[in-house]
Length: 143
Image 1 (tube, helix red, strand yellow):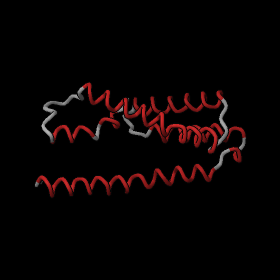
Image 2 (cartoon, one colour):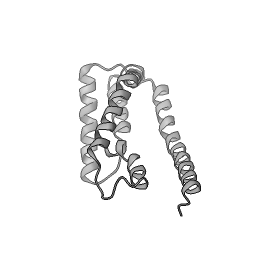
Image 3 (cartoon, one colour):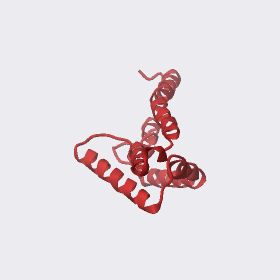
Image 4 (cartoon, helix red, strand yellow):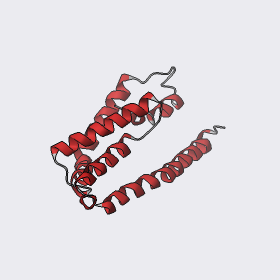
């Protein structure tokens, strides 16, 4: 379970007065775990299909190589305190594994769609955060 899954709930708990010191309650961890499980059960197949079949065709050995490479990069980045997205790391590792067969084994158009979604995530999340902060400021008169 990653912190970014639980992080959006923390400001709500603080504002509601339900969190008085810096710790994440067990019920938040369980709720986030259940939410991730349900999300994966109902929507995970699309991600698996895109990454394992649409981007490039993966066999178990390729998946193992991609996971190992991704894990090493994440570990190294963690040692040096470098923030990174685990999703971006595994996606690019899968593309790298596909490219070992031949460059044309990777459907670069699908990879481009994924990168475009990553790029759009930043301004969209910024706009959503601004909207939520503006509404909160308007409703609660926060500074």
